[in-house]
Image (cartoon, rainbow, N blue to C red; front, side, top):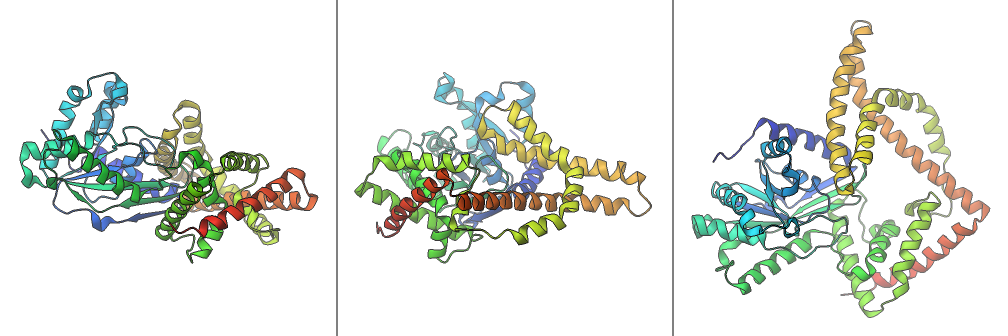
Amino acid sequence: MRINNWSIPYALGYVIVAAGVNTFYKRHAVIGLENIPKNKPVIFASNHQNAFLDPVVIAVQLKQPTHYLVRADIFKKPLVAKIFASINMMPVYRERDGVDTKSANEGTFNRCFDILSKNRSIIIFPEGNHGKFKNLRNLKKGFARIAAGAEEKYGKDLNVQIVPVGVNYSDHFNMGAELVINFGKPMDVSKYEDILNDPRQLTKIKNELTDGMSDQIIDIQNLEFYDFIHEMFYIFEEDLLKENNVKERELSKKFKVQKTFINNAESYLEKKPNPHLEEEAEQFKENVQNLGLRYWLFNKEKHSVIFSIITLILFFPLHVYGVINNYLPYKIPVWFVERKIKDLQFHSSLKMALGVVLFFVFWILQTFIIGSFLPDGWKWAYGISLPISAWASYQYWIMLLKTQGQVRYNKYSKTRDSEFLKLVDQRRRFKTCFEEINSVKK
């Protein structure tokens, strides 16, 4: 068996994803890299919220190539299977595939044992499926079989380590979101005896990993009030960060504040359950969207828009230049994904990967084709202007959307729109709950 190192497809994918993470997300943070054991076999056990994107955003944080297990049904086509194998993907069968998972996964698991014996790493998703909700689902036992099987085959001295990983997206589907990746303290598998044959040992290692993974993610376990808890943080995000002296860019501190708020909210709802809160939160979110508003707009009674409008007017020519030169590589991935890919969990990963590739290809082609019609010395200036104008145009578009929202908010406030006033009143009631939650000490 050959253990792939820096193969050309893997290295190319690494560059694409690394570029994508730094451009697709508004901000991102990686916490706990010092927890990754050196010169030991490592299983990275991560939550799974965003299909193909989860393993690759973890992989680009690692200094050495890793392998990862993905659902077997995507390997059905030979060409696709060959491409995935070239970037270190391995198929894993699930109970829903209608097969005997133990026998079907025997080959993949044996390969995992051999990979770990070389002090290499594997990324696995113990939840067994992906989902958009920010909570940890029940873990499957495959991770334990791989860890224990490797030590059974190569001896306890192999010293397999399991690192709990949390991948947290502020938005699963759209560009401009925030991404936080947490690496927790490693678990030493050798301290467990006979995991595969002793249910008590299996329960212990599952419980330890469950706790470790839960610590690394936004984990809302109270599903009865999931939307209320989730929306409350974003409705009053500015207040919460200000109370804790946390700046918006400090993602690691922001993550801790959000974890604390969730714990307090779940304790509050345990003591004072109100069945209407969940429905009201859903209605509030829907009504805010229907009016074309965003939560942050409600932080002020009125927004000043003069400076923003002047800025938009002055930089409009640069925006037009950026749109003309960058519209196709931006629009093609969006068009393709939204029309051809049914599973929403694959949208952001494909948008990011296709966007990086297409922007690079278009910029190269435009530089040489259009540059050939330009005066001497202007070709490379034009080429350099392409990524700069793309960034400037994107920032312009964000400012335009924010300004439109502010103008719309001011209009509703001035005209005393009835639906708008209902939202203001409802937010005021939510603010009372928010303050009560913040006063809870678990």
